[in-house]
Length: 169
Ligand SMILES: [Zn+2]
Image (cartoon, rainbow, N blue to C red):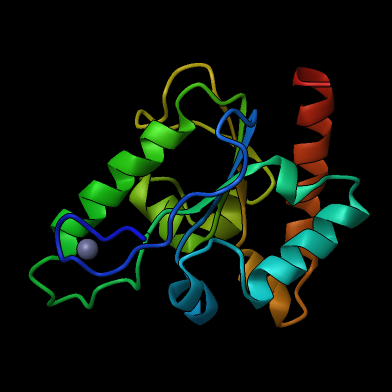
């Protein structure tokens, strides 16, 4: 079990094959992930796995993490900025050496200074923060699909499949 080096809260630890070519980044952990410490272990993960299955993809073959590795601290929390920087560095480290990254959710697009997620979902995006050589596909949060908005997630996963077949397979 790991803890945040800044605030010492228990963190959601990256999981999945260490050498996976694809990394899936959720923007923040849900209640279930915070309880288990495992990314995509709750409802969001169930939807993501189902939708990936439909697209012919397997989440368990991919590295998985959340960008915020614990609950997002409140705006007035004095640790907020340091936790954020630490988690972002951990994320960039996980991205390094991967071929494809699926970057999900509004928090992620904000942290990487990308346009709002609704305007970039399913597109390949660029940011000075990304390590060189990695293809990053933006996706709306799979959590949104829990409340029956599957369309954007499906488009992003279709893009992931397309790029995966081009680059990896
Ligand atoms: Zn922290």
